[in-house]
Image 1 (cartoon, rainbow, N blue to C red):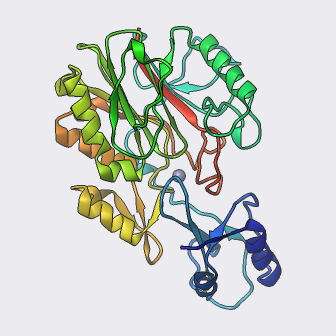
Image 2 (cartoon, rainbow, N blue to C red):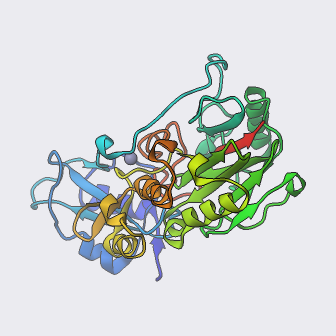
Length: 355
Ligand SMILES: [Zn+2]
């Protein structure tokens, strides 16, 4: 499908031809000319009388964005506002903690477990050296950030988390491959969306910017794991693949602890209905984590689905934590691809290893 990209063109239509005001001027839009004409026909007003400027996302890693504008009549158009659904009560329980020993200038790191032998954390975007879309604590060398800034950010992280050693990564491809990592694998970066390691001093790192980072640990059997779960991976079965890899590495389900990190929430993860239907078809019980959106759209709770999948496999519900907020709602604290209008941004690190 051929798409025309251009925020400027959209802004000209909105601000010039329609006389409306964008509240998020850095949004980049992509649209098809014919559907745009359809979309610009008047729809309906929702929520506090504000016009809804709606982005129909096919994926967290955005390849396409469609714009639809809805309003109730041809009366004067009020301010456009990009909305989310504040459904905090429907989010899984959230456990937030920061390292109390880090002082005021520290990088905020969310942690799931109060256990110093489990070296882990969900790092946000605050406190680093990057600028622009990478502002500021991007720790990936593979998203276009300045190497010097990334180097500096790793120095900052290592000062704050001195126990962290070399960190193993995979080249995340929205698949379900889970790699077994050992101390000899350092420096490699094979394709994959999960890693497991047994023993000590092997650290695993994942990068996300709306997808769900999942950390796993069976401390009794000295196995750790990490998964990158966006919608493609979830439908593909990344959770099942991750659990299999953990058990093959020696973990036991009864001892498994799981933490999902900051990622796009039910409030903001809007997909078109065919994708929502696919979730319902291909993931048992996923329909429970779906909410109706505007016509033709729905909201999906990725963390809710992941939580159910771990429970269904036999992981104790009390051992499954959801840490941190919606990355899009809190895009000042966490990188969010959607909040950036689909542009490549920095990504946040989630890491785990046993010391
Ligand atoms: Zn949100």
